[in-house]
Image 1 (cartoon, rainbow, N blue to C red):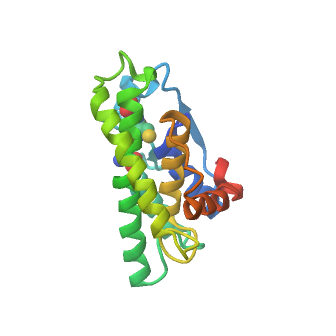
Image 2 (spheres, rainbow, N blue to C red):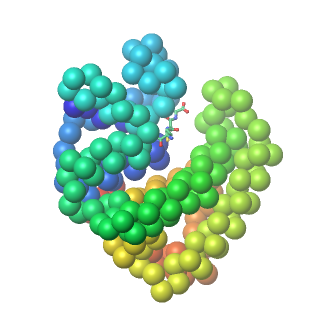
Length: 203
Ligand SMILES: N[C@@H](CCC(=O)N[C@@H](CS)C(=O)NCC(=O)O)C(=O)O
């Protein structure tokens, strides 16, 4: 099997962190966004949407979507559980992971795509939409800071998929959206310091 990756992109990074947490090692091929490798016919044959990550199995089956790929590995290697152990935990991880996708990751990608010079000429940009998403992100960081009061992790009482999604979203926010975590967000800063220290954070 092989994982197709896109250099420095948040969604493929979710899968790489997930694999590192599971101690799973598989071949990875990194495509270059600068040269639009992921928009060439060879890759579009695997995912016509031209999006990464993509997992290709040995029989040629292709799996797209970060969470679907992670769920595949969760079933193959259940420990440590990153989607929850019990029925309730699985629902809680689902709830928090979706929230981290919709309230953090998608807005941050919109800020990047609609306001950053990198995308000029590559995508139609709507700067006003990007700026509206930047404002939303500021609010969502405050919200998450409050949610983390008295909690070590975002989903259940151990590191899980929701933490991974929030981690890559906030890394992207800091890197390309000029939105580091404000210092007075003590709970979010504590959580960030803790997840950033994990050996898998740079996967
Ligand atoms: N819902 C998909 C999103 C995949 C996605 O948007 N990937 C981005 C990188 S983070 C991509 O491939 N972008 C390339 C482009 O838009 O040209 C997932 O969770 O995997």
